[in-house]
Image 1 (cartoon, rainbow, N blue to C red):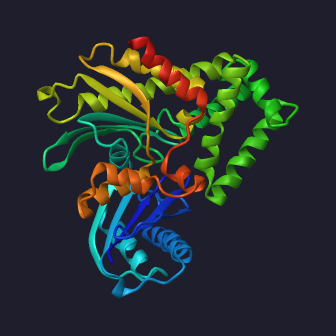
Image 2 (cartoon, rainbow, N blue to C red):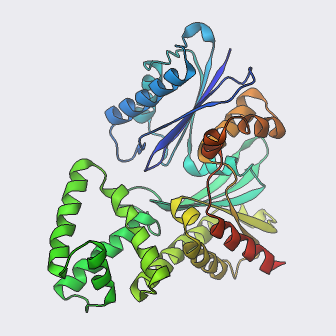
Image 3 (spheres, rainbow, N blue to C red):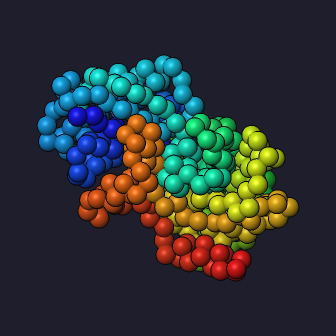
Length: 376
């Protein structure tokens, strides 16, 4: 019995999938803490991966050991592979409660590649992730080879997350301090932000903000919680028409769209390809939850690709990154056909399917559909 184990990491959490392709049944899926190889040391990666594998062992109902057969292991993480991090991940799986020792094949791919697989690998596509971080990753398929690709953005905490929730949250904090100390004139933004924080004066808001930052840095959740502030920008722009918040969201959408165009422009061999229609697959918490941001991003993308000789279309990502890992593994190592893969991923209850299919708010789906109708 051969097993497929896939682990997809992200800033706010990771997902692991364990599947026996030789037997009909629902894949075992568990969630765990975020996995960030560029920012975590090998010890933290080891502990987190070992813990999530332990959860898989509990869910499977029995300890699996050497006689079970070879293991095919696939990691989808935001950064490029590093030998020491890969060694830590291998050791974590081997020493976990799963007890899987016979590692037949191991592959590390980027989150963008996992999403490209989740899009069912069209001839060419751009993956746009807009959540805590934002990045664009362009691909085009090659016969009997890994797809050619070019990535822009999303390289880590200080190196290219512009346009995502962390970028938006940082800009809100910057503006609050700038209006408090006089670098910017006071506007309705600081007054409304102050009231949302439950403070009666701007000076009290500054004290609360610095305390909030210190506490979350000490708890190791600063980036996650700063990213959550993007919801305040969405509320102020959408419900109260705050000019600063709206300009900030437009700027974020512009940065993401610019990354998308650059990823396409930098794609190796692009000049030799006749793309025709170029799908842009969108995913990430910010884009999946906000129709306002989806509309702003689509407009920015239309401007960015106006001069390109392609028919760009905008679609929600059908499958999640962990499903993309399963799609790649089942096709590459087990010879599954596309229809058989879709059948495997369709098994299970509602909670299982929520891990396989990203949830988009209906208003976001409507915004994307409306764009497609206008192009017809």
